[in-house]
Length: 199
Image 1 (cartoon, rainbow, N blue to C red):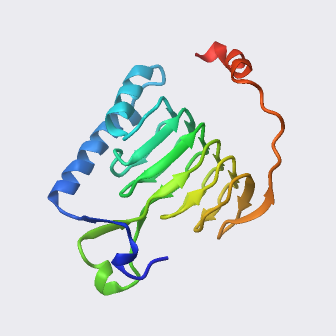
Image 2 (tube, rainbow, N blue to C red; image 1 turned 60 degrees about the horizontal axis):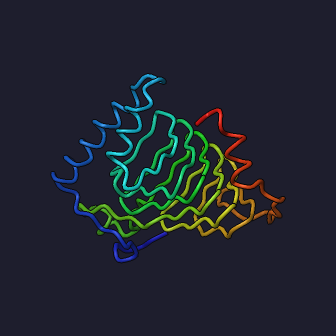
Image 3 (cartoon, rainbow, N blue to C red; image 1 turned 120 degrees about the vertical axis):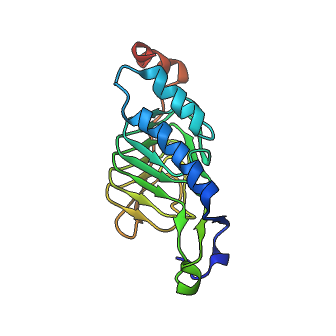
């Protein structure tokens, strides 16, 4: 939690230019969110247009974001329906991250000091989600958080602080409850063969 505007690494003036840019993103998201399930190319084109780095992630409509350009996917991944990303600051999402329905990822925050909170300034801190993370339904990831590779965030959790790699973390506020020892992984070739029918 932050007391002053100076606690935020990103500060954006709230003005007509910002509102116009966000309206443009919302117009494109309208097309994405109202597309037919078979319109794969239209959906991919919209995501390629608005996201900072798309990399073929699968996103199930509806999907919402503030800016789009600040969202960076490393490779692949899956976002279920109703995900909201408030990306005033950058959001870095690693390889093959799975995000459940109605998850909120919010880089946005507000200073506690009312004299600063009433100013026309949007304040935010970046979020980083590591490779192969799984985030359960209705979880909330707050500004400035880093989630380590291969960790699992339980459904409904509110993540207010960094989560280390290879663990299960749950609750409000979210806390680590156990570490994960992973089994031997299939090879890339084996995985490609298993998923071949969908490519």
